[in-house]
Amino acid sequence: MKFEKDFEYENQTFIDLELINEDFHSNKFIKCIFNNCNFTGSSFYNTKFNECEFNNCNLSNINLPGTRLEYIVFNECKIIGVNFTLCDTMFVFETDFFNCILLYSDFSGLNMKGRSFIECVVKECNFIGSYLNKSIFKKTDLTKSNFVDADLKFADFRDSYNYFIPLNQVKIKKTKFSMPEAVNLLSSFDIEIE
Image (cartoon, rainbow, N blue to C red; front, side, top):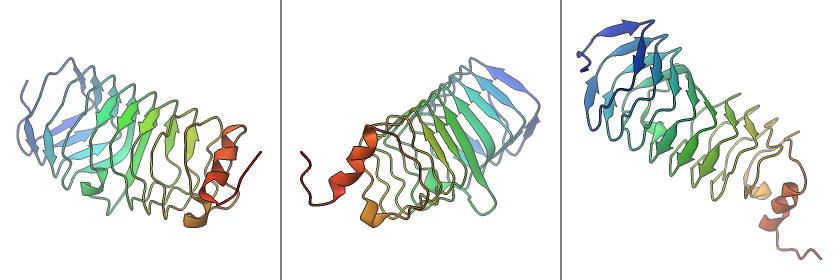
């Protein structure tokens, strides 16, 4: 299947699409569902996704210049090397991730208030300067992810692990953590714990 340029798709379900290294231009996907699709290396130029769901999709190395992601849910997706900062965030950047593998991706500077990362692997991702107020990172592996200058007020990191959050370089207030991982919060200070 090939998507037509400047075409709008609404209330459609797409299954088992193999669209690798394809270019999409100015398409609109409204209330669409993508199941078991592979978009590896594809570019979505000025594309709008609104109230869409991606289930068990491979979105590795996709490009998103000028693309809008409004009220999007990713379930069990593989997302590697995606620069979400290229998205059009003028209106909304509302994405939630459940049981996803997110590696080497960039969310720096994005307003991600109230977003969810539930039971995900989020390794070596950048959240530098991101607004993550009230966001939820539940049972998520955050190995080598960078939160410098992020606003983590009222965020929930309970049951997440492998995080390094330099408390002297983030904004926190009533941010929730759980033991024993919360001890890692002290690693940014020059102290010894015995």
